Amino acid sequence: MEIYILLGFVLILSIYLGLELISKVPSTLHTPLMSGANAISGIALVGALVLGSDTQLQQALAFLAVMFASINVFGGYLVTNRMLKMFKKK
Amino acid sequence: MSFFENISSIQNIIYIFSSILFISGIKMLGKEDTAVRGNFLSALAMFIAVSVTFINVINPILVLVGIGIGAIIGSLIALKVKMTSIPEMVALFNGFGGLATFFIAWSEFNSIPSNNFQYILVMITTYIGGVTFSGSVIAYGKLSETLKVEKSSIITKFFTTFFYISIIYLLYSILITKVFSPGFDFYTILLILTLLGGVGFVIPIGGGDMPVVISLLNSFSGIAAAFAGLLLLNNVLIVAGSLVGASGLILTIIMAKAMNRSIGNILFVGYASSTSASKSEETGEVKPINVSDAYLILENASSVLVIPGYGMAVAQAQHVVRELGELLEANGTEVRYGIHPVAGRMPGHMNVLLAEANVPYDVLVEPEDVNPSMDTVDVAVVIGANDVVNPSATEEPGSPIYGMPIIEVHNARTVFVLKRSMSSGFAGVQNPLFFKENTRMLFGDAKESIGGLVTEFKE
Image (cartoon, rainbow over the protein chains, first blue to last red):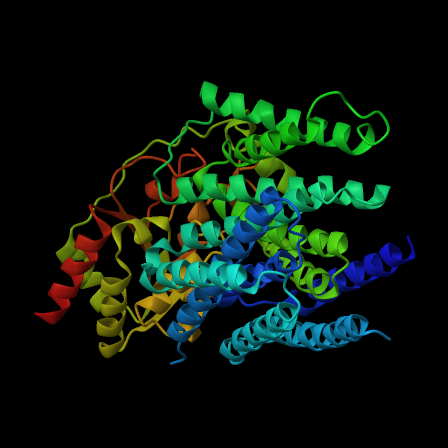
């Protein structure tokens, strides 16, 4: 149980940190921020890598999780980068 | 310390380093000058976290195949997609992230959770991941306009019912099943109900409210990853997931504020049922104008404000708009673009389209910056925007959109409204702007009308 309290602590602090960091984002960056954050949510890939594989079902689930998280990671970062490159100052 | 414990400590130390990069990355993503580097830093953080986890993966070849397929599909979509399809693309990627956490939770359920807390986490992660996935798929369908379902249709009601059933069933799964093991496969039912619930969550929400939904789903995908981190006792998942959850939440709040509505109202009520109050029966003459007369007025203007909306995206008019802007500037006119936060179908939609057309971002202004000096604007050109310039929001307390911050173009000297026909906006509210003394309607396809103006200028 101790470990969950500790990790819960990390969770709360991280959310608070996130809210503080991004509270004043200019509207120009709304889409890139969303799409960049979306790429970060592909961190589920790390979770997918440590899954157990005792049964066939678990192996299949782990494989699918890895694949879909990878689409999220690669697609998300590339599309964000492509978008950001378009923004130019006068 | 055994060899494996060593590996695990080293991994955790590197996870801390990766978390720091994620935090710096997302901070830099919030400022124009550093955004590209911020995105790169967060990609680097991802690479480090994945690489260090890969060391003790059980089946490395299978994993590499999975990553390879994902990389190819993801890259192809990201590089091929047209900028006008960005909203649905973001929704789709978001859904895939949610689906990955859904599978993670499912797999963990089969590992037989060791304690009650873990058991609860499995249920919650399953639910958030699944709802993010199926909700995002519906959002994708709505944004790409391949899915058209009326809010009042029986299909909508059917799925909305399932949304509520799924929540009740989730509570049942969390509270009861561990104590009284049910005699049926309750978890499979949870999986199915979760996916149906996600459909029901998004299906009743209309097009103009999409910016809110898409931000909220973005937030969910982060929260799902953070819960998966709790489940797997993994720090970097928790930190990265929480950051995404927070950024999505901020965007959701910004969007809801820009509509002057609560998030609950947007998700569960919608415009249709809030129109009980008086509908203004504004009648009067609309004053149409043709391209050559519009040209004469624009030629003599010293300050022009362009207000784009979803109509500009539909007509793909951003390139001709930029061309017109350049010609006006060459003519000595000051040109700015008034961007309302909820114009379009996702947060920052208009900014992306204009950036694609090479409009520099420093001529884009927000409502609160431009409204005080609106009376110095000679011509306000409204291109396919409606509700975000509707003066009812400031003048008519009974209106469903009363109180919503708008771009107050009716205070400009002259207003051109480019519009296909006289239909009302997404909110279903008539727009008194069209009947104002200083308003001229330029009917027709936005791209053609602007193109006509460009030709006039060139001659």
